[in-house]
Image (cartoon, rainbow, N blue to C red; front, side, top):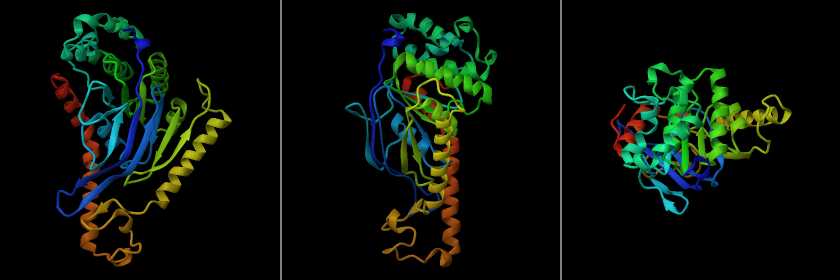
Length: 329
């Protein structure tokens, strides 16, 4: 199959709720996602933006099948998501290349694990050309720049012909100039294959430049604040009036969401998230009379959750590799 023949599949996230238990108190749980619903059409490129800790990466892990929601449903086409699958590729900020393998062997690693290298060997050369690394096929990762390493990671994910490609800030560690070049590279790969892509990013300009639609999330617990369509033709001009207008609109939305979001991130048995802010029906003390010990406990719980988020990328990569049968890098 040629790279251009592949098509993506639709993605649906329906009313997903995700909580994490507190390591200090079994009766306290941290609410990370609060009823998130997102749909992505087949072949669409959608970005998710929001403040740190809003659950963007948690949502990607659920879609990848690395974790399960407390409630809600996730679907790829008409197939429910219950475990990791080669139909969903995942690219992290860290390329996570195998340092002992050449560029060619890194790209074909997934084919080897699936036992399909012989019939698909020709695709390795095809993807080397697609990402512009055919001259570096026999180079090792330590010879590559950051942008080149990320292109290898993209080729390694795309060669498995995923129906959906999940991108967890894949360009976040690159310098500004390399990042802009890589944005064009990702768009070129997307236009060549029309794989459905879901991109998590903190960069508003990146989201506007690359996306068909942009999903805005609130601070923790994560909810969908709004979805914005980007109607501009590609390639987009970052200094155009419409581009600047969209940037201002998104910045205003993020600022408004940050100010308007109430502290619902910690819930206890019998207390709903909507009642956790002192609204009618909540029998706890108002914030100014809150028990200092409980405030400290909840703050520590939130900090532990943030640390778990920060450490999750490497763990998730290892989990995916274990599922695919590959050795950890």
